Image (cartoon, rainbow, N blue to C red; front, side):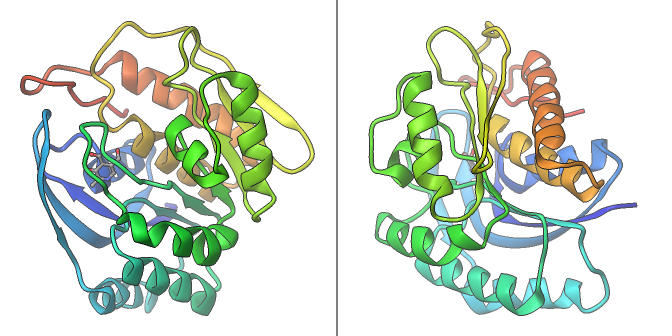
Length: 255
Ligand code: PXL
């Protein structure tokens, strides 16, 4: 059994966040160890509030689980505060964790900031360089690279800029106009994973599922190219099986 440590926020609507992460890991036969960073109150239409967990308590959760289990991979999702960013960077360094997949969760698709804007510089300088792989969508890649990312050429440019900060980069292309191409840049070569557009609005949680599936495949010993390919296929299937739950975009169905 592989153990994946998830450091992420709760989504009360059950589609994204740590709920999606646990479903993904469980359906792939792994065990999710969890450290909660924030609790969101949200439904399919909006995030009504965010309650942050104090950084010292994020640390306590991580330390408690690491006292007896060594995870084969780590997935980091919503952090919300600068204090959480700093604390998680400290934990990664102190415990020598490996296979760190960082999902740079900046904003909910319904609009609310899930990382305080003033924490973005800290995120780029202190946390990003410690990750093995970072998995921005188009908007997040644009913010991290300091450019506008609309098409596949922009994706490649942004991936190069972000990779120069340290980690391998997968820019996920679910928001591209005409295709669903995910792009991996590992510092040496570009790898493109293609899929046709899926006609659905039920995509809530797709980014969380992708990054967590990637972490789980890395935990199982796959190399980054193979793990990205498998996470791409797993996420496509989750989107195809997405379903209605409320009035807005429904959740994807991992597994
Ligand atoms: O999909 C990004 C995301 C991550 N984590 C939490 C979220 C969301 C989006 O709503 O609520 C907790």
